[in-house]
Length: 117
Image (cartoon, rainbow, N blue to C red; front, side, top):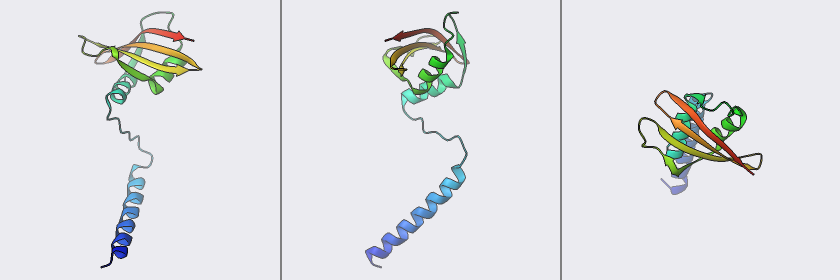
């Protein structure tokens, strides 16, 4: 069998497999959160959020930062007992927002929100 025939069979099987895979995964909420940052943000977003301070009620900023922000592990304390504290940073309307989140087993508490221009 020549190389061009083997390549044709390979590409044909690959395309059929991709079509079948797309058919089965269509409409499902499938994500590939393998990195530590993505796992932390997914864990926080899956829990009920509580606000510890009454003045922190800007939920649009908080939801945007928790969805598109970056976890700063150098300033976070993930191994603190009983709940780890994470610093999540991100941009919102050209301002830098820094969010402190206490991530417990069943809830996530928003401790502080700083918006820097």
